[in-house]
Image (cartoon, rainbow, N blue to C red; front, side, top):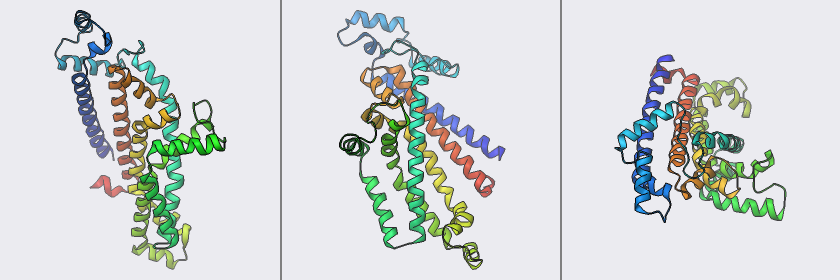
Length: 305
């Protein structure tokens, strides 16, 4: 297990290095940082002075090594737009996005896994077709449209939940549902397919011969093997919730990392955008690593192979 963990951790670090360099390269070539700092109406002399002051006239590899070294020390640079350390901005906004992503994942689990299990227990039945219809519908509906519909229905016509802000847990109900609904199709289909395949195994027939039926059969025998691909997808989906929170946080006026990313892009705040992309990518990589570890713990054959 230790060897397997080290191999996966080294691969994750390599991916992190590649992502950080690609992000730094693309952002610094796509936009002139000196122009972003000086503003649209700045004179060429002012832009040149800023480039000299901030060291933006140095080779990009030198600047990348300096930035990467700062990241390793916990120094993410200073924001051009807010004029404060980027680390402070990220730390202030991160708890909100973490809470939203965790709530959205919980919504996905509570909807997708029971639907997938019901469909697997009743293949080609009306229940199965209903579950597949829900999955297709959730996949076809974009987040921004679903968010607006939820605001109109449950925030305006029936004022049950608040539609903006992040002060209480009630503020997270609608955005968590909107963000979590997009992951339902993949998780539900994987749960259904995995359980149907497992239910045809010899050990399941033996369990049935011993009297196990329905959800008792799923819980005691089938779910452990069928859940392997679902664990991987859930971990990946949790990572995607961070990057995918931009639209949801904007619609519901939630002050998290997603909204910070949008504000930074609109304000040409390159250090903040650069750090947020890196953070989102690292969360995604970390969730993939976590999925590998969980799968290896559930099925020892994975780490042996």
